[in-house]
Image 1 (cartoon, helix red, strand yellow):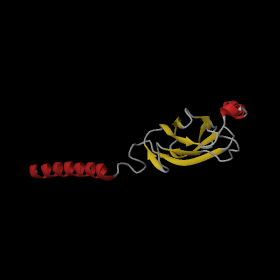
Image 2 (tube, rainbow, N blue to C red):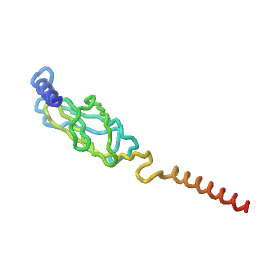
Image 3 (cartoon, rainbow, N blue to C red):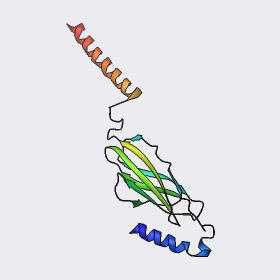
Length: 152
């Protein structure tokens, strides 16, 4: 319903010559991009704020919407600079972002985010942090065993 109202308003404004002098014959869709996250990025929190920008050189951006995992389109806050709060599901999440200009042209962007509830990802601690923890644990075990051996 909100989208229909926004499109109605956009078309109404498009019919007012004083409000859209540069939009005559605008057939180009707006461009939309995500600035806050990269595609296939791994995140450790389910609740995120996705943000980006939409640009339309013709009639101007009327509406930006976001859809998570094929669900309903939800209007983002803002137009040229937009943001949307999302709650990701465990694993891969497909996000679509749609920008609509005042002439009804639609631009679309998609990305995938991977949510893993443990902050280090699907495979436990990774990299230097995991190696340091493993080294400390092994050193503690070795010291404990060495101490027992000396007592015997």
